[in-house]
Length: 167
Image (cartoon, rainbow, N blue to C red):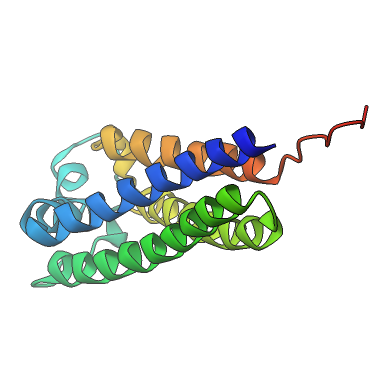
């Protein structure tokens, strides 16, 4: 059981580190993703294309600094989720060392993973609304992969290893 909780600790430290770095990268270089967001929501790639997305172009948003404000919001959300993931990771480390009381860590991790998954679902739905899969398939694949990782981490977190003597 201790090794299983150690594994969970490592996974949550990794997820916490990853989203913390992603948020920090976005904070240090907000211009890159602001530019990509503006391109996605303006739907200019679809507007310029005579075939793809013609029925969706009315959804475009062209507002000055829209991408920049979206990035500030996304960065804030990412740091909040990172805080919840770090909390779960710390609980798992503490309870692994104590070899007791992992239910509190499991509950904290379930909340953190729910928030983590909701971010990727939000990105996937927002991207689908603006049909980003037609011109920006890379981000959609990343968001889908992160949703899958969220689901797998949730399953791992809730898997109960049998205690000694149980069949």
